[in-house]
Length: 443
Image (cartoon, rainbow, N blue to C red; front, side, top):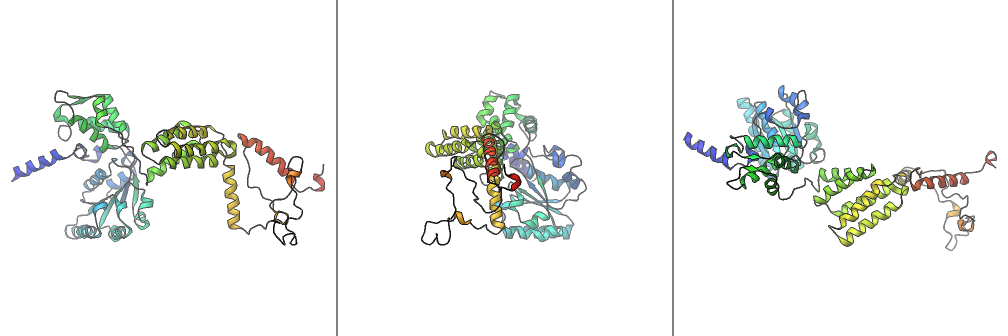
């Protein structure tokens, strides 16, 4: 019977992918996330003092969320129960919670309830967790790739510590790949394979901080080697990763974070960074029209009248994308992005419309001055509408000192950058000439 179990266990191990076999067995084998698990860090202190309550592990795929959950249960000597929110209903969740309560009452053993992809639970399912989390029946360890502050209900967030896992560094992944290649018990060590440093470096870099992806690439490279070849070289590693899969969730944080970095790079006058973030979006399959719209917005919001040509070029790029499509449309987008990044910057028009809109929303509306009212209808003249209006084009320089608002307000304040410097001087002169003349101000 024991022999049968050993054979069955060996078969299970053999069928597991390398990424599953190389999961860390102890906390000291866990790679990366030293900002959470380093000496003196909060999560490490909670584990070492066994003060664990409920936590949410938030981060991209392949950063160790599932592995860390298992290690937490092991380190705190608790029973480990696991559910996947994408395939678990309310009935299964209640059964898991009831089992944890029974385990605590009968055996005095506490439970770590690991729920993967918790954001797939609806509000009702999340609410089911609250009583047992509140009473300490389970220590909830939830994993999610979605921002928990948007995806989870507020009562659950308020009862949990949120820890954000970061993508693994290239050095971390190189260490993991080297270990997997040499480990005879769990890795590929029995095959006596070697790999060039260029191959290891390539697999680490192309994996975007995802340990699972890196190990999958290494395993494919090893399995695809001809029998007579024992070294994984750069060419073999490149063939094992046919096309880099860009980590980019079109509906999640990655979409908004990369788009934010893109716009802020234009605003910050860094064309290299702006081009990189745009390439990141395009390679991940982002709709180029979304990028074009963001460029048009930036042209007015961040460049404005400091370089009015920026909006013209942005609109032309957006039109070019519609007309010629991709991939050639990327060139027009790149032209607009680099132009805007290096253009002089002004948000004066943006500030002006927001200030005026705030006043419209919050205060009593200003009446239209009588001399500005429409007089092109029967009876307007009898009401005095349009009386005393002076037509500017009749003046020598097409300007007259006429009040157009009825109150003293200044919403638009051009900068001294680019074309706005000339506009600033011109506006200052108009405001000076329009100001009410007092005896002391007479020439």
